[in-house]
Amino acid sequence: MKHTFLPILLLAISLMAGAQTAREEIHQNILLTGSNHMAYIAPDKPLTPAPKGYEPFYMDHYGRHGSRWLINKDEYTTPLEKLRTAHKAGKLTPLGEEVLQKLERFYPTTVNRLGELSDIGEQQHHGIGKRMTKNFPEIFSGKTAEVDARSTVVIRCILSMEAECEELTAFNPNLKIHNDVSESFQYYLNHDWDGKVKESGKKASPIIDKYRERLTHPERLCSSLFTDDSYWQHPEFRAASFMRSLFNVVNNMQSHSFGEDLYPIFTEEEAYDLWRLCNIQWYLRYGPAPQTDGNMPFNQRYLLRNMIETADTVFQSKTYTNGASLRFGHEVCVMPLACLMELDSCGVQTYDLDNLENYWVNFRIYPMACNVQMVFYRPKKTKAGQLRTEDILVKVLLNEKEARLPISTDQYPYYRWTDLRRYYLQKLDAFGQ
Image (cartoon, rainbow, N blue to C red; front, side):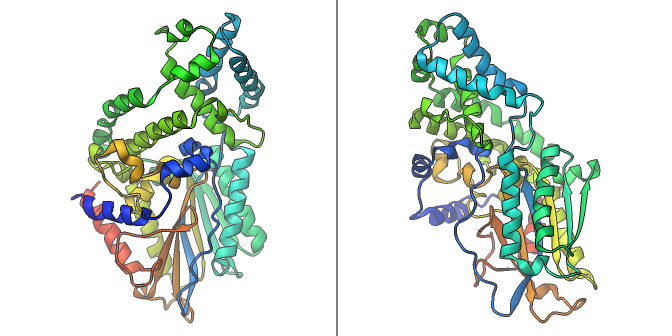
């Protein structure tokens, strides 16, 4: 597919004009450096009212699970064991001892909980579900309203689905909710790595390796934690890897109401550089990066097509009145989906990775519990079975904020569904299978 670099880049620049830079945002909130470990931030701006004479009646949704424990035991034990060994050797400074003690206090909470939904994660989805009913009560009201909710087979996703559905039921006890979890849904609820996507993805690693070396500076941190510079400077210690692994644990502490605050052990510049590295990694591996042929977002081609086909089925029904199709999975789906749909600046393509944060910012796309909501509107007096596709309007929310779409409209944030549907199907068909 031909890349529309210049128009998309100009759109991104126009969207960011007058807005805060990523560095400014991080200066105000260091938690943003958590990237995909960042806790969800509820929106604080009201949504645009429905166009005159229109009402919302259907939502097509994909959401990531909420905040969780880290997935692999090694993510916790790698930095912990380094500090334990140094403690036994008498090589820790008072700060190093303090960090070790905090990690030792937290580590028992991780046993047999790897990858599971945390208390914060559950709260996030209760909040999202409650706001769905507040923002779009027409979708979830009445005795004929229907919700089809599906999840990947991972428990944190299933529990996230249940949390949102509990809020929908609390709003309308008559709501007809069908929950389903099956391996048969995995091909569109999870990411796909075959064909062109897989081949393009191979180009990411050597570029990431270069930036990993350039953006990891463990000298000051290690000198503050260890009494003997020769100790951590030994090649077998792998200081840069230690720094990144420790930062990973620190970032994910925001997933818990009882997490330890260890951000102060990093300077803002160190945290910013490690975030930049993560930003580049995700852009290359899941984003529209030209370095990986712009192909990586197409690992969600089956999901986007399923969303379109599900909407088609709803709109062609003679009996459907109102409701939602809810899907739950992972950030490795939401992020490339947002890029594939070209929401706001998600579709930006640039070779300038040194300044990527000026064009494409990961924490605006995929925090814990990130979500894409396609909200459909029809003329208010439409009777069941008489809905015309050409009359349907749609707006898309990225993390519950109104997003700009890659087609023209004279009534932003609302777009003609027929125009958007045509654009996406042409894009998917051009890529092929």
